[in-house]
Amino acid sequence: MRLLVVEDNAADARLVIEALRGHAVPTQIAVMRDGIQALLYLRGEGEYTGAILPDMVLLDLNLPRKDGRQVLTEIKSDQALKHIPVIMFTSSEAEPDVLQAYRNGASCYLVKPLELSSYFALLQEVVAFWGTRARLPGR
Image 1 (cartoon, rainbow, N blue to C red):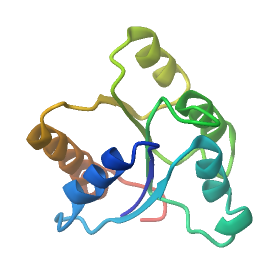
Image 2 (tube, rainbow, N blue to C red):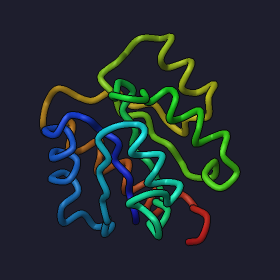
Image 3 (tube, one colour):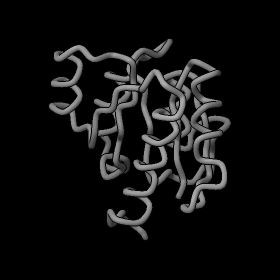
Image 4 (tube, rainbow, N blue to C red):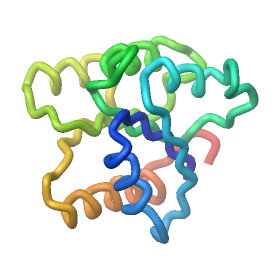
């Protein structure tokens, strides 16, 4: 499974990589640190020319340059990208954020657990579901 992680916090990005290291579903992870970089990657533009589309996007809400809300809206408005499942993975539990994410096409909204073992378990469950249970385009 090819996973695009859009996360500006280097420690959180590292946790995602560690959580999925050696997972039963082999996962190739690309990390983008801001919303503009993520969209360039997804569109195969600039330094990302030829980048292969991910099977899934793990997207934080609060990002520099272009926040996760805007990135989600652009992904779901783009005919070439809108089929990609986007999992919002954020610390925000605010109901307006949850509602807006689903209204804008998020496949799922997950709040980052504070406990490390729960954090790892949640990410492993997500990848197990999307990597083995869900039928993704091109798979």
